[in-house]
Length: 399
Image (cartoon, rainbow, N blue to C red; front, side, top):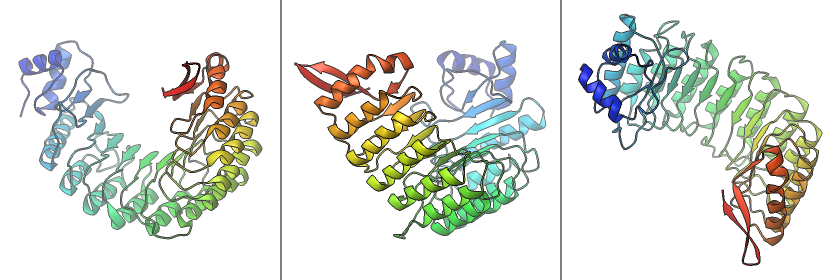
C-alpha cells in the first residue's frame, strides 16, 4: 500500500501516520518537500524527523499512536524495505520494533534483511519485548552467521529458550560484526550461559553484553563462575549487564578478584537485583580502592546494608576512576548513608550518585544537604534524591 503525498503531508504536520504505507513514497515526498531524510515512526510520532548515521531509522514504538504490530505487519515492513533497497531509493540503518507481538514468523521475515554479507545495510536491530521463540531466533542467527554489517542486536525479553540460547552462541562464534548484544530475560539456562561465555572468551568484537535474568536453579554461583572465567581471557568487553542472576557474596568476590588481577578493560558493570550482602560489598569496595578500571557500578536492589555502605564510603574517598555509583534500595540507614556522604567529601571524580530507596535520617539528610549546596554543585554531581529543611528538621524527596 502506497502512502499518497497528501496523506504524508497531513501526517507530517499532525505527527501521526495511521498506516504503515510505502517507505519509498515517504522518502520521495520527504525530498520533494526539502525535508531531511525521515526517521520513520511506523504508525506513530514524527516529532524527530532526522537521518540515522548511515541511513533511514525505522521505529515502531508501541504506544498510544502505534497499535501493536503482528507478524503480518512485520511482513509489510520487510517487503517495503527490500523493495526500497532493490530500487536503491534509500538505505535503512536501524529497525526498532520494541514491545509488539512479533513471533517466530515475523522474526523469520526480518531475517531476510540480514541475509548475505551486507544484507540491506541494517546495522541495528532492536526486537526487545516481543514473543520470538526458538525458531525465530534460529532464523535470525542463521542469517547473522554470514552477515558483516549488523552491529547491534537486542532480543531481550523474548522467550527464545534453551535452543535459542545455543543458536546465539553458535552465531557469536561465526559472526564478524556484532558489537552490542542484548539477550536478557530470554529463558536462557545455565548451559546456555556456559556456551555463550565459552565463545566470549575469545571474542574480539562484542563490547556490550546484556545477559540478565537467566534461569538458574542451582544454589551455587555457577553463572558468576563461568562469567568471571570469561573475563579472565576477554580483553574487548567494556559493558556487562549481569543483573538479576542470583549473584551473592561469593559471586561478588569472584568479580572483584578477576577485575583486580586479570581484566582491565571492563568499564561498566551492572549487578543490580542480585543477592550481594556485606561481604560482597566489601570485596567490591576493596577493588575500587586497590585497582579498578570501572567507571560505572550498579548495585541497586541488593542488600549491602550499613556495613557495606561504610566500605563504599572509604572507597569513594580513595577512588579516582569511578564516575557513577548506584546503590539504590540496599537497606541503608542513617549510619551507612552518612559514611557515603563523608566519602564524597573527599571525592572529586564521581559525577552520578544514586541512593534513593534507602532510609535517610536527620544526620544523613544534613550531610547531603551541605554537599548538594557545595561540592555537588561545584563538581556537577547528579543525585536521585533531594534533601531539604522541613519544619525545623531535615527531610528528603526523590529527585
